[in-house]
Image (tube, rainbow, N blue to C red):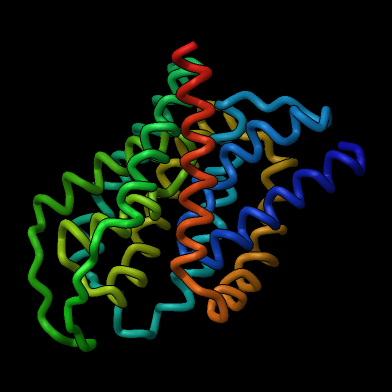
Length: 259
């Protein structure tokens, strides 16, 4: 790895993690297209969709550990919800991460484009706040939570994501989970998802460990900085910027696939 390659990969990890930290959404939905296109455009590398997904999977695994640790004593980690969704998403992400080995580059890109399109729509769906205090009883549809987690895990596992960008709106809009419980619990569920995804990618030899380590270091530095910066910015503006970036990428991939 030459210095130019290291700098480009580090900046992709830094910028992607900074943006995801600002808006509180999973970083893979941003970093996947950045890794797929930017190194190729700059002539420093040409990653395949399999390699991009593998790098993303390992990076997400380490990024979610810090998030779960931060909420461990908050009282908002709902263990029954984690049990329903965590077990299902682990199976789904393991199948998705392993099964992606048998998909073509185009098929993996299509899965990303579908997830990105869904993410843009769900980012702007109205969310009704549900009152909640730590220790309160929480009612939710367990079987539905498990099914949705399994589907999310399988799809996200294919592209090397943990699925937080889909899980969060599902928990808020469909399952009617309070916001603070959603934020904390989704981190735990996505950490479990990243375990399955990473195992699936590693055993099928889809991971490039050099770029993955660079991305991990960049994300651990940038994500907290982005989260702090996001506290002082208009979240609606950030949502629109992120949505337009994701939508533009999805449209580019759809165009390439269909043409």
